[in-house]
Length: 371
Image (cartoon, rainbow, N blue to C red):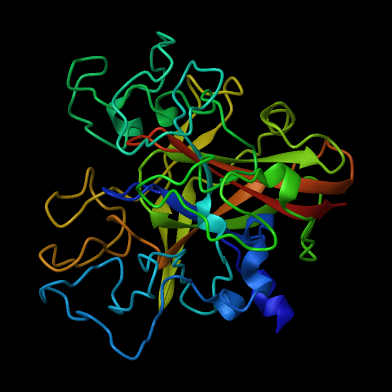
């Protein structure tokens, strides 16, 4: 039913070789999943990914032509078969195209993003000269053994290296990550709601899901990584009626309420230790959570030890339960605290994921009522 569809909305952002980071906000349901009411995406469908088709290609791991990102082997004509896959183990993630709302060409110290191809990114894209502020190895998600600022520290200009500092194209994301479609899944299938380059804060309608949060309480929020680009994230609030921009959202970052994440997957859940960064962040001293899933692919082992027990045959798969390139079968669930001091009323919850391998930021916006 409709409520089931609302239950899962996702923003996709993560790090992929050959694909932009992608993510989806699943709980509460996001405005970014606006296309969930359309036939191509209804009932949690991941168009242009198709689970079945008349004439699939390779479907077995290791088989010539098998693509771990398109395990069904189904590629609809005129597409690359890559959609906002998301699964939470029990019900549909109703995320539609939410993983395609992001900003790219964004590096620290810059006033704007250039919208150009950004994965991977190994340069200061506006020559700002800003130095990274997030440099402890245990807070980095790529190349931890490389000394910060050394020539081998290739990703030091990317958003996660100064969490919250890099600009965005829009605080609710831009459809397709830029004005023009680019390689690396920086795309958007045009619908009556949005097209490539649409600004989320302007075109996405309010999408009330019945989510009511009490001031001073701890509340559950969940997101899904479609394509893993490392980095880390923060939740924040902006009152409905104010301009949905970074200035508004940065007034009210939400503190994390516990020292663990809950991972939810088919067959169960597990608590894992969380890593928080508060130094060198913006807003100053606000808490950001490091993406707990280390990137890996069939050629490269995980960037740091996976936080859960998993078994992965890396000759056949990119991804485990809590590591890899496309960990979309596991939801990352957190508790955040709603400040006692804020006014009751209607708010937009903002989610911001600052990537580390790429000059990309994923954004999502969701409607909540605070009493």
